[in-house]
Image (cartoon, rainbow over all chains, first blue to last red; front, side, top):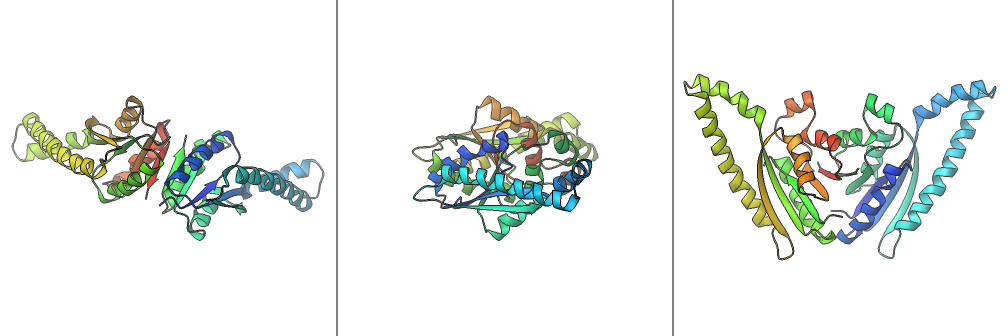
Length: 150
Length: 150
């Protein structure tokens, strides 16, 4: 029932709070954990403007930003992987690009997880007031059980 | 971390799905479970009209309805209590009257629970479209972690 967990993270402090819950759930039989970071497509697009201001070629600049974002994300995911791995539990990492809540819902299906564990608020409090938090949208759109850590 | 669980239920099928998750969480150290049913104040008020149509005194009629509601709720809660109780786990039942999500948030605080486990949709799909589901409102207003079972 808690055998395969999806843990989507934007590496924010609220998101990190979920980690200790995942550790505890191992006692209820977790066998596999999928760590997911989604690169927010819309945020990337917004950065194009910044590239323009710096007088850079937007496409190249965007590519560069995405590459750096991926590098940092990979490093962070591997840190969490080390923290969660044990003899009984397999940990896998994924980096995806898209709309965070949609990607989370999609990967949860594709990975056939039994539970999603996530923080309730990530980066971007203003944005959340406008469009709802990522966790709210995940809960609304997934068929999987979701543990939301405040 | 999962030592004291609050399980609010309206006895709907989606709500009952949460029970097997609670059973599983006992393996991660649950020691106490609080079963809560909230009598929806607004629903009661709406029933006054029905009482009028039946030519009954609204106050007495409402009292009668609430009494019956409490009796049924008590019976249902005790059934669930029997199902969840074990040598290691204490189970307590509560019936409250008010706005369901507000009462759930309040009781979670008062009982100092470590987790709320609930179904994602209860009775009243139309109402949910208008004001959001009880679980959405609980997640939005509580500081406690919430496991939402779909």
